[in-house]
Image (cartoon, rainbow, N blue to C red; front, top):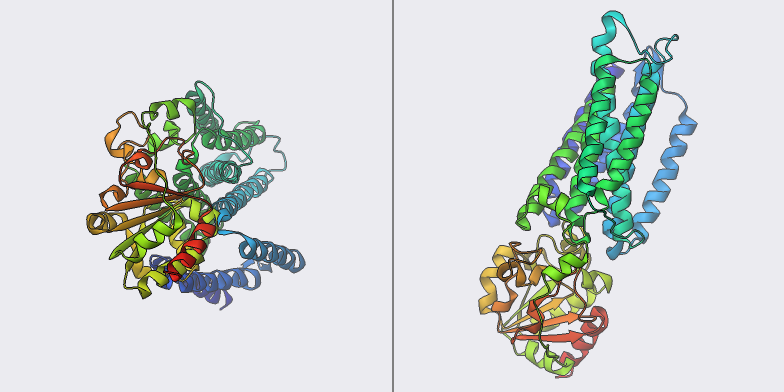
Length: 480
């Protein structure tokens, strides 16, 4: 009866994961989707703790189990509540890395169990008729170890690069080094699984160490502008590693959750690459956004003078416009200016101005960063237009206000074959009658390349912190 109840709870939890993931596809239902999936996960955890039996024995160790749950809950809750929107990408990367670490630890523990099945083993796992079964089991263990370790180490490096504590690092021939390192890992794994050698324990931990090393060097050369794609890819790795754990324990809900995360992360990675008009291979080896001198030099053709616009002129221009588009970028997140932006939007609408937001798929530092940022300020989802929709309307737009966005509006993506971002779909803001760009300075964006848009005749620069500028702009408009 208890086994049937546990199976039923796993089934319910699996369904909640699927329903929750579906609900995440729309901002209006995303929060409830999270709640639904969280309820399912809670049922699965409690069912495993209290109902799971192996050889007639319950798990026990409830003090350790609930102690760990309590510590993790407190740390996770405090981290999530205190994190700023600017730091959300690195928090996602860090949490994802913890998932990879858990998957790797499962493989380490299960290998230790497997290695001690034979008391005589100083290296030989099992011999005789059980060898094939052991090899299949060992295959899943090794896959979980490699993928989980790569996900953990890569996510930690991504976290460090996003918060600025780790700088981009590469050396000549690094991609070849990475390929050779991966080949060694695969070769050692194949040798371990096929031959079950006497030094299996040593080989296994060598694979573990090399996988961590590969995860580090895998992310090191990838530039900051590609971090959203890397985070999505590493997230899919964690899902696959978790699914391996589900195989090991014959746990249906763990398997389902891992497959869902792996599939969703893979699809999102593909969509992100499509949004940048680049292949995944190009992302992984292209070092786009790394800020290297070669990248900057390749796009160094944009020279000229820019013109500035005052707050009062901006206020007049926007107040008497018929249609205004706001293009949010990472600068908006840095300044925590989403609420001031929403206030500006409501003020302009009270004057009869049609205000909408143009959202580029890779704006910010993670997938959906701008959507989450504006949702926090209660901006109606209907006002957030995707790139294709916005591009169709820019030609009839009076004013486009760009808040901290840079590379996603750079015309070099269409006009300069030498630019690292050439071919990437962008927001065609230059089609509007007036373009106002709010930035702190004329420094290049995260991709490390100059923006030709800043020197175009219809573009005016409005320098300053986004939050301060928007608040002053609201005050100016109210005084008109």
